[in-house]
Each structure stands twice: as structure tokens, then as C-alpha cells.
Image (cartoon, rainbow, N blue to C red; front, side, top):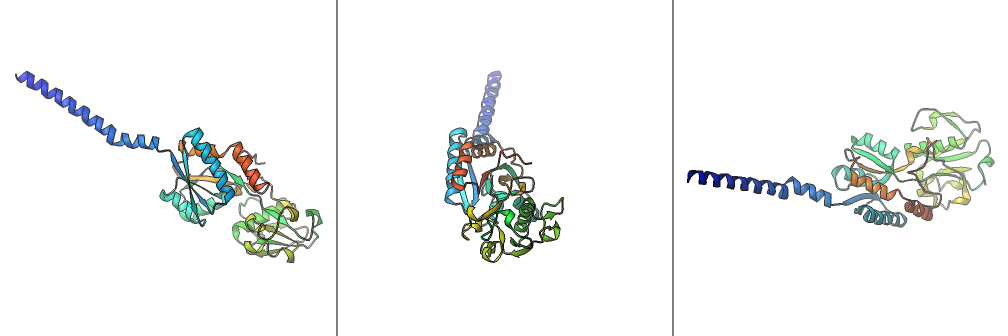
Length: 286
């Protein structure tokens, strides 16, 4: 009788252990793991998304769903200070709104925590003129307007350097007018707010104007005398998809990058933006 009771006790103990283990995998970490594997939704933060960009991301979302089983949701922010904070806090999984230079400055001011995981595009800025048809026509002593904020001024100066108009101190990612080492044409640089560079076009010989302000100022291909090249100087202006630090190798996020970096995306970018926005992931930087 005692042996039978002992055997029954052992059997019931084994059954209890099996039930506990099964429950652990059903309701404990095992369930969480399975949910993570099945929950293939990725939220991407963007800023003031245009109709063109929305169409591009709609195409990317379709590719992500069909090829990788991922659902992409877009969260639109109204200013550039929000998406990186949202990424660090977990409100979004990825963001796609900034270039390398912006990210570097933001990380420096906010304790880091955001990393790039894939390139999207670069939007070359231009030197415009309503007085001259080509770069070679600019006279000695010409007045050129450039933005006066640190980031945009630096970019404008590199444009002038690549155009062969000035020389700059080597080894600096961000430069100012104080870093000009050569000015063979005695150019006069007029520093104005970035939003003013297009508006002052009639009172200067030429102006370096960001894309956001060129259109509203009526500036386009006809007034373009030089386009920023894609090289080591402009690499920092390539736009990127970013993730929270520690998620660089997340396969789900890597697949979103793959869904973006396709020939279809490249063709849509060309269709909507022409040469003002160029797919950058396969550009070879010289």
C-alpha cells in the first residue's frame, strides 16, 4: 500500500512539474518571445511628410509586407526635435528624417542613443543666380549670399569650395567663413538667414539656397549655375534611417531598410524629385 501511495505521489509530482513547465512556456517568457516574433509591426517617425514622400513610403510599406511580412506604420512629427526623442523613449521603432550631420549634432547635445542603420537619399543644394547663366560668368568681386546658421553655412561653403570658387581649411567637418584659406576671385559673402537666401537673389550675384527655400523663391533649373556634388564633403548630408542604440542588428529593422533600398524606391524618387533628390544607398563616395 505504501509503495502504491509513493508511486502515485511520484506520478502526480511529475504531472505537476509538467503542467508548471507547460504553463511557463505558454504564459511566461515563451509567450513574450512568440509575440515578438509574430508582432512584425514597425513604426517609423518622419517630419512633415510631403505627398511625394508619403507615396514613397507607401511603396516601401507594400514591399515590406509582401517580401518580409512586416507592417510599417508612419508617425508624422511637426518639428525636428521630436523624432529622436520618440526613438529613445520607444514611441517609434525607427525614424527617417535626418542626415548624418544633424544626427551627430543631436547625439552630442542629447547624450547619444541614436544610430544610423541605412542610407535613404541626398538632396543636393544649389548655387542660383538670376544675373548669370553659368558659373564661369560670375565676375571677380561677386557677392554671394549664404545661410548664417552653423550647419547650413558650412554646407554652403563646401559647395563654393567644390565649385572651385574658394579654398577651405582641411580636416574640419563644419567650417565657417574664418576657415576660408583661398578666395582668388575676391568674392564677397553675404551671410543671411537660411530662409532669406532665396529672397535676396535679386540683390546679389548668386546665392546658395537650401531646397526648402528654393521653390518658394521661384528658383529652379533655369537659375541653377552649380549643383552640390556627392563626394566626401557632402557625405554628411546623406539622409538616413535610424534606430535606438543597441538595435543596430535587429533583423526586423534591417528588413525595413532592405524594403526601402530598392530599384522601385529609386525610380519613385527620380519621378517625384528629378535631380533635386537622389537615392544614396549605392552611391560610391570618391
